Amino acid sequence: MRFRFSATKSQALRRHPKRGIGFEEAREIFAHPYYQDQRSDDPEQYRAIGWVGDRLFTVIFEIRQDPLGEYYHLVTLWRSTPQERRLYEANA
Image (tube, rainbow, N blue to C red):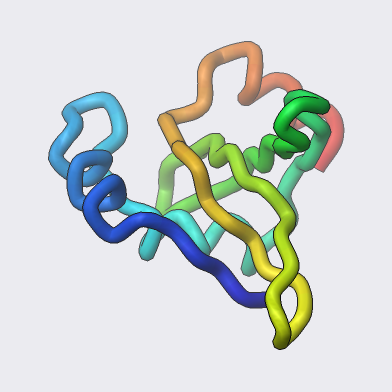
C-alpha cells in the first residue's frame, strides 16, 4: 500500500494538541485491523478508524491513481471520537 500526503500539513497536525501525530505515524492504522467507510461522494473520500500505538485515530483519505497504480492520499486525521470508538468496536 502506497501513501502520499502534504509534509507541511503533517507537521502542523503533529503540533496540534488534539492530534499529536502526523501522517507518517497515521499509516500504522492500515497495518492493523481497521474500520473503513465512505465519508463523502464529492470529492470521494473515505474514513478509516484504527490504532496508532495505544490510541484510536480517524484518518480521512482519497484513493488516487498515478502511473504506478493506486495510492492513498491522506487528507486529515484526529483522535477518534467516542462515537467513532463505538463504531470501530462494533465493526473491526
